[in-house]
Length: 344
Ligand code: ADP
Ligand code: NA
Image 1: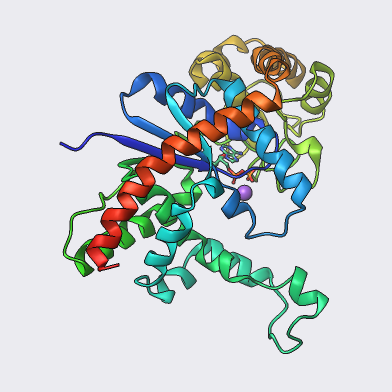
Image 2 (image 1 turned 180 degrees about the vertical axis):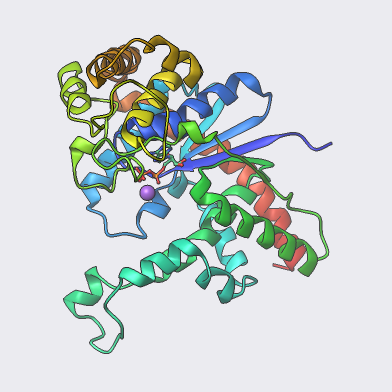
C-alpha cells in the first residue's frame, strides 16, 4: 500500500486561541507520535489574502503563527513546516485544477453561499473605484477550495486533519482528484480521507457559548489566546457566560456555557467529561468550576508561553525556509508528473 501522507494548513491569524489549540494544533502535535506518516503543516498565506490584509501585519502574523506551532510542539525534524506562498507549485496546481473543475461545484459550497449572503456590492461598472479595491467578492474567495485541493494533492496526501466545517471542501478535493484521474487516465492522485476531531474538542465562545470560539469574533473577551497572562485568563473565565442553575452538569444544549468550561478542562487534563463532572459532584456554584478551569488553562499555557519567549524570529524564519525547501522538492516532482499526464 502507498505510504501515509498527512497535510494540513492553518491561516496566519497571528496567535492561535484555545479553540485552535484543542481543535487542531494539539492533534497535529499528537499525530507526530501516533503515526509514521510523512507530515506537512502549512501556514496558508495564499488563503489569507482572499480577504484584505495589511502587508506588515500579515508578515508578522505568519511569524507569530509559526512560532506558536513550534511552541505547541510541532517538531521541524518530524514535520515539514512551511509558508504556502514559498512553494509556487501550489498556485500552479490550482490553475491546472481550475481548468477541469466546474464552476457549479464551487458556487454550491456552503461557505461561499454564506459569504454571498452578506455581500452587497454587485457590478464592476465603476471599474477601478476605491470600492472595487476594498470590497466586493473576489475570485479568490470562490476559488479557494480549489487551492485547498491543490495544497493537499500536491503532496499526494492520504489523510487530512480538518474541522467539521471543512468536510465539504475535502469532499471537493476528492472529487477534483477523481476528475483529474479520469480525465487524464491516470492514478496520480489518491483520494484523501479526513481526520476529524471529536465534538468535545469544539470550543465555544466564552461570551456566546452558542457559537464557536473564533478569531473573527470582535470581542477579545470571547476567547483565550495562547499568549494570555494568568490575570487575563482569570478575568475572562470569571466573566464567561454560564447560568444560575445550581450544581454542575454536562448539558451542551441547555447549559452551553458550563458544558464548554467542562470540555476545556477535560481536554486539557486528558480526562473524560464524566470524570471531570464527578469532581464537582458536591459543588453548587459555578465559581469553583471557573477557578479550577482557570488553573488548568494557566498551567497548560505556561510551557507554551515559555517556549514562545525562547524562540526568536530569525530561528522561526529559518525553520520555515528549510521546510519550504523540503516541501518544494516533493511538490515539483509531483507537479512534473501532473504536467506530463496533461501534455504540458
Ligand atoms: P478561526 O475561526 O479562529 O478563524 P480557523 O477557521 O482559522 O479559526 O481554524 C483553524 C483551525 O482551528 C481549524 O482546524 C479549525 O477547525 C480549528 N478551530 C477553529 N476554531 C475552533 C474552535 N472554537 N474549536 C475547535 N476547533 C477550532
Ligand atoms: Na475562520
